[in-house]
Length: 336
Image (cartoon, rainbow, N blue to C red; front, side, top):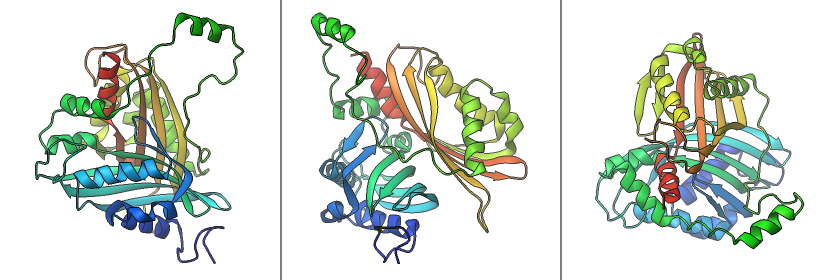
């Protein structure tokens, strides 16, 4: 019997299924298996735009494997829950390692070893990957191969599609007169819903939402005094002060941007501390002094993933990722 309807019986649970996907596609270079694992409508969000369809995802995977041959992904943790009788959603965290021996995503090969954290949320339906939100610590990768954040952002910018030209005034007039149907024709990521109803997922979601709403005092009240913190750029912090510096630096750069928590997962299992994972976004203008320098007025969309463990004195470990070079690339693109 399969663990969920329409999944192959050889997989006993979501972890086994995702292990097979990781081994074959992420490490094993079995690009011939892309149609077997990916839905025809699959969508990938890596923080700076969507990739839609198995062919496009296969090309993106091939480009990464070419730049970082020998890539390995060691999973640190997984949280998963059914989202329907034939679907599940899972949050994973990996320690990744590779040698920068290939041309492409990060420029000429340097031969340097890189190690970095990667985090993902995957939605699998009827035996295939339907949607994935995937972040890597791109800042850590750039630092290890000797590329500055701004140069890495310019490199990323060269790989992004150009912004569409503004429509002529006549089109603006027609849009203004049209009824408010189809506000945007931009493709949207499919959604697995809001997540499971575990209390720990709601605890983490509420905590981060309050922090990004300006209630920074909750950090001192709800973080363990010796909490371990893991942030972009392979930054390792400890305690409420370091957590406050990270979250305040991000929020201060985008003070008017809309913050939303989109998905929550939580679990309390034997031999493990209570754990939670959330997916969030920050969308709006770069109109403040913070993590990205002087305000530019650029419109940005930031995808974020946060995992946490809880102990008797509050949140004791936190992992948060967002794509810093991707955000900088959006700012540079807006500046022309």
